[in-house]
Length: 382
Ligand SMILES: Cc1cc2nc3c(=O)[nH]c(=O)nc-3n(C[C@H](O)[C@H](O)[C@H](O)COP(=O)(O)OP(=O)(O)OC[C@H]3O[C@@H](n4cnc5c(N)ncnc54)[C@H](O)[C@@H]3O)c2cc1C
Image 1: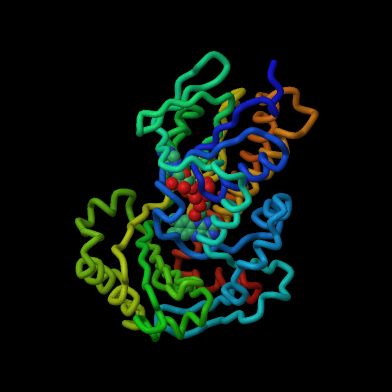
Image 2: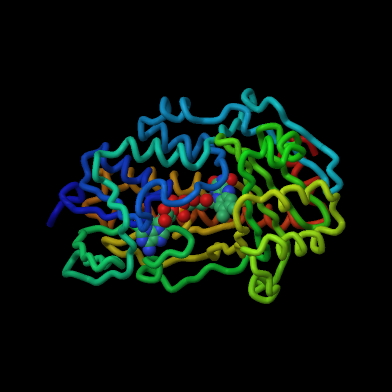
């Protein structure tokens, strides 16, 4: 039987989870490629900044030998946090987190992706490879792509994010609706196009909370800002609301109405938005999910444990999955990929369940009447 090192590993999805795994496997001598649906690394605008946690995201980067690259690209000061009420009053601000024990440095998604891509051997990522389906091929797999290409691989790792097409090959378990829908937008060149918000943001993050709603705003290194509202809604609100989210005026009218108990200062974000708005109902994988491991197919990141962003754990969990899976693949205690995948999934499911629990509590609390107190508590200020 082939050793894992002699097997051809295909990772589907070049998000932070898939790329971190590729780096960790490649540096340990595994044969690995990443198949990504985007045509190249610049195909899509990249989202908000991400705070990396010492025990997960940063632990993976340390193991990947990428801390120098991280230090050259992270954004000192971007972790500055302001908690603001719906009337625009600053309740709390945290200007110097560097010395906090739980300091969580921020990096933009684009530079993080670039660090990981640059760390891989040329041609590791095969762009324009939109996964369509899997077929068994003896002990291995035949992967079908939208462009008609077929590929044989011994081990397949699903890292294709929230709406994974591979997850159903492992388990029929589906995510449940988490009760909150996000509406996301961006303002380019915020210093000139949204000066009041830019000033309020102060190069960091705003958590605006009140009336059982949230508005989270983050600055980005390219001079833009990104923001998302969070509201308690029904699962099908996006459809039922009848709003055309690419029509700015319709979204402005919705905001004025839905946030009528908020100060008009927040409207500046919507009036100056540079792109269309994206509504995102939030889902979470069941906390007690479990399945029988397969010997040569597994998953990581949002595929495995999609959860709302209200504890800032998604990227960190995806990168820690990559670290744990690569550790299992190289662990001499496991004789084959089946044993390694079983060990990885066991610890991943336990950890994901604990984090999803915290995240769901945070999601509910930030959209409750007690949101500000909850957030103050998190910042250690009760
Ligand atoms: C509004 C918002 C704010 C967030 N804020 C934070 C935060 O502050 N901190 C945090 O830690 N997390 C945050 N998250 C969550 C975080 O973005 C995800 O948890 C994280 O990106 C998961 O990484 P991943 O590698 O598993 O998947 P992804 O980043 O989703 O990457 C999946 C990759 O797979 C590719 N792909 C998809 N389908 C296919 C296919 N069929 N074939 C080939 N390729 C495919 C995609 O193009 C993508 O490149 C936020 C999420 C949202 C929506």
